[in-house]
Image (cartoon, rainbow, N blue to C red; front, side, top):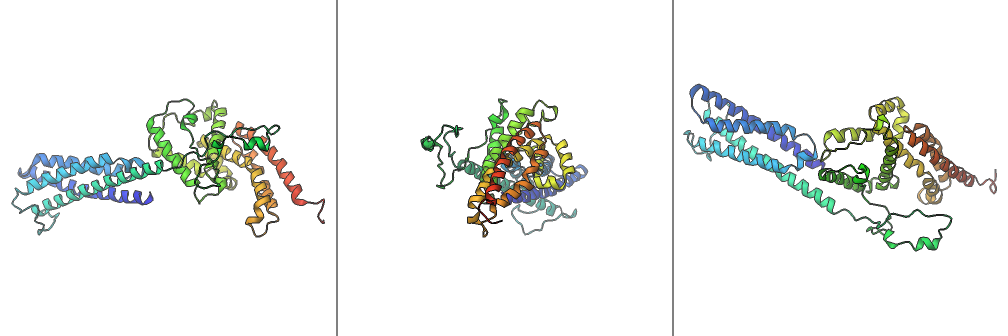
Length: 402
């Protein structure tokens, strides 16, 4: 996708340059006609208008958005327009006595003293404009088909039903084993039990009508994030399931806090299609500020940003609630499986506890929302119990030498 964007920017630059050259030459031809009454006025006016529109839209569509790459219909319209310009210029050139329009033995020229060379230059750059607009249209078709194939090729949900909440006082291992097989993974990887269900825009919007364009935009972003976060670059602590949990936490916090003035307009009711800059700009900025480490290093700056972007408060709290919920899993995994992954197995549980003490113990005080602080307090109490039990087992003072 990066190569496509760079190539698209290169083509847009060429469109602007070629159109600007034709615009300058045509403007000079119109000036000459006003002085000497020689030349075709109608076709020159059409060329002026079309080259001016091309200069304008080449700048607008050079902005790196999805719509600038996938709007290939407009590129085909401009291709047709430049084909018309080229035909009109060639038709007039044949009547000027400069020779055949297809005889390129003569040189191109921008000199005022070489009228035929100027007309040849106008023809040449109008033809090049037609080529680059056509190339941009083809690139747009390729990009759209690539996105459609990517969306169509995503794996189906491995879970046919939501996992049930079990009662630990009555549920036995036999009862767990008898649960429907539809809850097991159908992933191509036999041991991959990750939940790959996409986040539901309708549920996030709480009954607010959602347009088809918004649904398509959200689905494209959703699928791309799932593909990225379930890839090799991210470990299980930051895979797509982590994203699901953070979104769930953020939605619950917002549901509880939405009547407060500062959070009332956090979620936009009308999102533009293809995620335009005024959406992805603030979103990417907020995402870059979620980091716990960044807040510890510069708390004053993060406080200012939270005031400027209230959504940051919700996202930070949601992310840290997920971290508190995963403490016991991380500790148990480090204690049981740490030795299999590290050269020095003993001490891995202590390392996990140290991480809890240095990092997670600060989460409650860093919560920004009332709901986040309330939930964090509950989760921290549970985490402390696991932490203390792990420390007791790690010390083994009842059986080991002092």
